[in-house]
Length: 192
Image 1: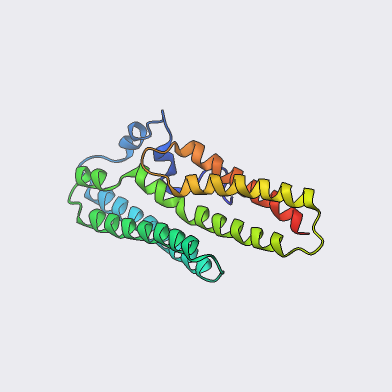
Image 2: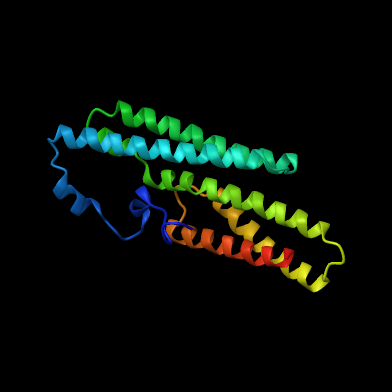
């Protein structure tokens, strides 16, 4: 994954046993309307970026042939994420003070939405790899079995990530996303 082992932006807010607000508070005096407005702008920009990423994932998935139920499942997850982001943006824009703003920005749910694009794309990719394995002529059964084993692991991890919610352990989720893509890479080697 580009950018290291953890997603950027708000992901640090979801790391357990780390309270960044104590330090951040030093730079955010409660009466500073300028900081409050800039904070809103930053979070709105981040929300727009995530929405654009969700739309990109939806477009990528729409350009490949998946079974109807698989495509529907992935598109529903992405659409739900887009809807959540749109509601979040309205809540951020309507926040009149820092307290309302903090209530609007639900970091755990936000991070769950951030997991959707890569997880959905990975799941769609695993389906495509599986189809390509089935098309192989004169396949080496042992290699095909190994590839399917890696694909099953990848799909299970990605399905778990697509079902993330505010109770998810996001440090573990980030590691699972990396592991899922590692499993996909291992399966791809058997297509050569």
